Amino acid sequence: MSRDYIPTGETQFQAWYENFVAKLPMYASQFRFTGEELAEIQASFEEVRRKLSEHTSMKSALQSLTQVKNMTFHDARVLARRMAKDAKNHRSYTPAIGEDLGIVIPESPLMPGGLDNVQPTFFAVILADRIRLDWIKDIFDGVIVQTRRNAETTWTAFGFDDMSPYEDMRPNAAIGVPEMRYYRMRYRYNGEEVGRWSNEVKVVCGLDAAT
Image (tube, rainbow, N blue to C red; front, top):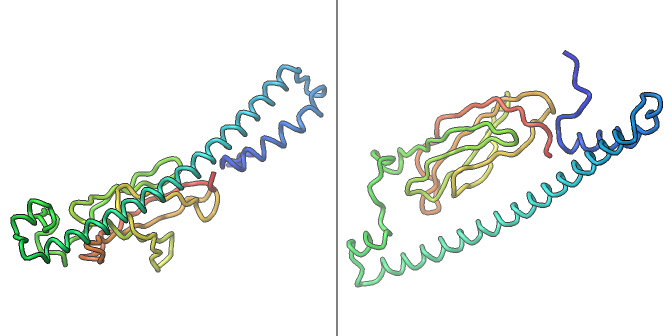
C-alpha cells in the first residue's frame, strides 16, 4: 500500500495544506477551479490554522495550570504532614485522636502482607493522542511510573504521579511506525518507595508526531 500524500500529524498537515492552498490558484484555470472553490479552500485553511493555534495555546495554559495545581497539592501535603507529626509528638495525643484525624494507617485490602508486599494495579487505555494509565491510589501518596519501548531493556523513569490517571503524550519514535510500549508502577508512601513493582502492562502505540 502506498503512503498517503496528506500528512497525518496536525502540524505537518497545516504546513502541507498551506503550500497546497497557496499554489492551487496557479493551476485554477487549467483544472477549471472556480473562484468560489478557491475561496472555500482558503477559508478552510484559515480555520485549520486558527484552530491549531487555539489548541496550542490552550495546551500550554493547561500545562501551566497543572504545574500550579501540583505545587499547591505538594505544599498542602508538606504542611499536613508537619502538623500531623507535631500532633503525634504532643503528650496529649492518643491513638483514638489519630484515627479521628486520619493520621494513622487504616486497614487496606491492598496491604494484606504489609508495605513490603504492596503492588499497584493499573490499566492502559489507548486514546487518539495519548496513552492513559488508570491506577488505584488507595492510601498511598502516589506511584512511580517507568516505561520502555520496543526492544529496550532499561526502564526510563517518568517520575512521580500523585493523582490517577497518568497520561503519556509522547509521539512514537518513528512517525507512522507502531511501537511496543511497556509500563510499570511502584507505590510511594510517606515520601518513600514501598512494596514491589507492578506487573508490566504492554500496549501497541501508534501516536504520530506531537501536534
